[in-house]
Image: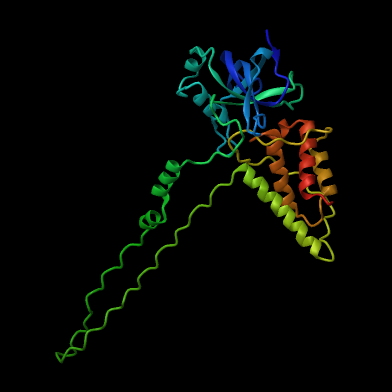
Length: 335
């Protein structure tokens, strides 16, 4: 029996055994896998400072992966496949249709990647957890998922300005009516025909394009930039905006958009507190020039960064509330 993983990092591994089980609280299906860690990625271990894979199989270090395959979407409110489901499809060459097939197909010895992060869940048996699985040759460096040239070309073909405009082209102008004639007056000479009204050609419709959806990293950066801008503008004024006399209640759970991959590293917890204590401390230390809505945006972004995408605030641990408080204060505090 090997030793349990004792550090964070990106590893290559070999599958020892796997199966399908249910999550303890909600009963959602999850993939469980026991793996032997064979290589550790060192981002600057090469001769020229480039990243290299370092062999560690002789360490005998093992890890357990628990990948929840389905969950309730915050947007639709329906049970839908998760990002871990998508990764299981890639790693195990699974068609995604039958969990029985995934369970019974023998993948022993299959090599792939796992990402190990700190386990901040209260009562966890291990301080480390497998938070992501990926294919053996996947890029071990955490980067944003970008479309390749072919995918972008397909988008051009589907959403180019010319095609959108053609699809919404205004109907052709109606034909002019025949000239109306006034009946002859007592058999006398008819009056001149009345000139028809010239139809006004309708204006071409304005084509509105949907703005590109921001990734989680871009959203966090935008919030930080907004906070810094408000502080800079307030510093130019002689009298800063006075804070409100009372602290508003913390916002309820709202839709938190997810992004591919694992949230970026967050500061280590230096203590613990409740949700309400974290919120009150933030308003005690916030820069008076930062408005409530900006603080709420920073609060929601920090929850997603620390506790993970789509987590309910009821599931956030006291140590995580401490980290969330530190992150928001760093972005909107008075320094």
